[in-house]
Image 1 (cartoon, rainbow, N blue to C red):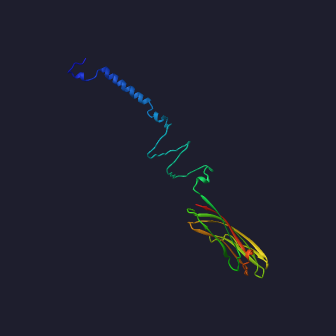
Image 2: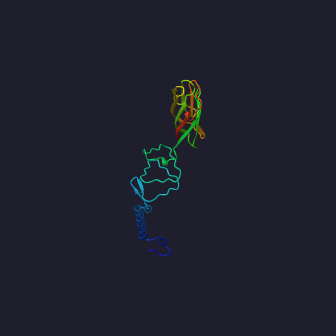
Image 3: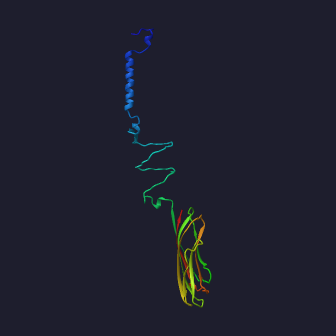
Amino acid sequence: MAQPGQAGSQFPSEDAMIRRIKDLERAVQELRSANQLGPAGIRAVPDGIVVEGSMDVQGAETVSGTLNVTGNADFTGNVHIGGTLDLPAGIVNNDALSDPIVPGAYHADIQNISITSGPNVEKLRIDVPVPAGYTRALVNLTATMNMLNNSGATDSAFLGANINGISPGWSSNGTAASGAEVSLSNTVALLVEGLAGGTFPLTGKASSNSGTWAASGSSAVMNLNATVLFLR
């Protein structure tokens, strides 16, 4: 037994030291066996962890392997995808996109026109407005014309449909005796590219082969009908 004033009296007994060591060993063993993250819904599995609760990542997160999400994923901020986005066919409908296609239908008509010989001359026009943000337009245009040949001799009439200054294909033509009528139709289609706002023209052009077919009221008419699909 230690005596007061002796050095040995300042140190715990051998039994107390052994008890302290055993307490520390027991505490270490409990820490090893306990799941400290259990209250947060996190548990360890071989080669990974399972998060059964929610996880709030307030800093940057980098995933260098495969990310498999079998539940819902809600993104309230911007999403940048640097690689290829591969989606099963049919899962994205048009309403989920920002107007990828804008359709339009256009009509114009005129009567009491006249035609003369030479190149086709513009008789009717539609200026189609281009929606903001669209650079292409798929256009289908049909021009129809009815004319009375009052030139005094058998003659031919020509009709062409023109999209943005281009006449795809040949003009339609028909021959009528003096005093007879001719009805023509010409349909063309074109993908117009390089649009940047403003308008582009759709026109109906006509001519005769040799004589002048004078204006004759409702017997000299032209119609334009077009459908347009604007594309980004």
